[in-house]
Length: 360
Ligand SMILES: Nc1nc2c(ncn2[C@@H]2O[C@H](COP(=O)(O)OP(=O)(O)OP(=O)(O)O)[C@@H](O)[C@H]2O)c(=O)[nH]1
Ligand SMILES: [Zn+2]
Image (cartoon, rainbow, N blue to C red):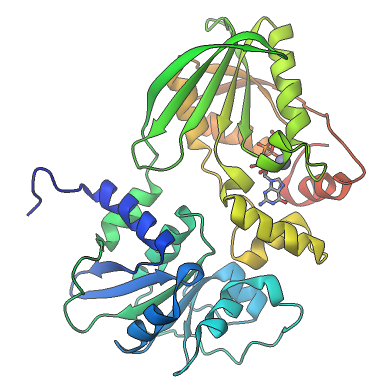
């Protein structure tokens, strides 16, 4: 029974994310079974020893990571690697993290499991991705009651919560004078699921009876703040604001989906792989991510909350057009945003055009 002051399933989900980031295991339950799951990235040797004492360990990896490791994935989107007895933390980390793949390419032979359900491992990986950690989970089935004090999630409830569209509430807004866009208003939105806040910058006074000049910008700390030459984000951000002022108004959504939704730490891992010669898409895959992990329903939801139903979208990414249309926002025009090309980001932009369908 749930106490009136006790956590809702969504609140437990958020608590589980925080637990995983700290290196604490969480309990994942299905009818008649349960398992402990922990993120390899934050696992300590002491916790590994305690988990190993409970029974045979399984290392869950996404199919992307499994492909790089040449491990057979019998569960479609993931592989369950049987952890050999006595395997230490370094063994697990080498499978989870591609940093040293080139130095030590042969990590096998890896035994992957094909028997039994993989639902708990699937939830563990989705949770770990949403905690912006490396997608690798260590899972051990529970044969006795779970240890006290650990967060317990129902697997079906948790995967529904993770797949649901985040409910965003406005928390504060204020006037903001901007060098590139004149006076605007910055609105902060908070997600009910405890995930990142997102921002909407209203430039001028956009006329909602007409399609509004709009940009969905994903956070890029390196490009937006540091002026990195590896991507075109900073110049795109600035050009979008200037275009909105020139047009008499517009809305820029600043979505905190750093690194196409993998978080800054994982993006830096990807950059490090790019320094080893992999392109932006290959680097994501080697880490165990899809090319793009962003949830663009957030952008559509925010536009609706801001009273916008039709847009002229500043983008070179056709996926953004499709996603807005699929989520009830009419895109009457795509406005190209071609700025910030440098010698350093030529390859990056070419890869996005070749592999992700961006329009050059
Ligand atoms: N994972 C990963 N993310 C990157 C890399 N370079 C840039 N990013 C992120 O990519 C995102 C770029 O977002 P957007 O500016 O919305 O770009 P887009 O999807 O290419 O679409 P448009 O700019 O609208 O054409 C930001 O979140 C960056 O942090 C990279 O090499 N790897
Ligand atoms: Zn960038």
